[in-house]
Amino acid sequence: QVRLVESGGGSVPAGGSLRLSCAASGFTSSAYYMGWFRQSPGKEREAVAHLYADGTTSIADSVKGRFTASLDGAKNTLYLQMNTLKPEDTAVYYCAAKLSRYSDIYWGQGTQVTVSS
Image 1 (cartoon, helix red, strand yellow):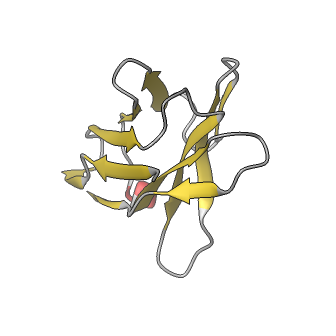
Image 2 (cartoon, one colour):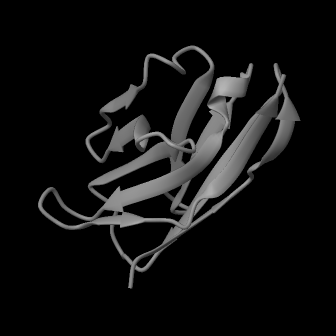
């Protein structure tokens, strides 16, 4: 079955950097969609970055210029490079994938990112 495993979270001071990874398994072809989401305590889960198999990408305005999402197709691994981190970036970060346009969305277990001021 599809499995997504995030890693790379941690605690950093404001201005620091982290790179999150999401190792995907359980599907033999490229996913239709992969993305990063985050959720802070008491807030709704919000989208951070979207990547589609046709090469379309988008990133949230709140992180534009600081975060970059990329996909290594050979390793089936999704990355989120996060630079110039701010305390408001503190959240649990989740990886998501869809195998086709109409399939269910799969979620990873999440990885905690904490940014101190």
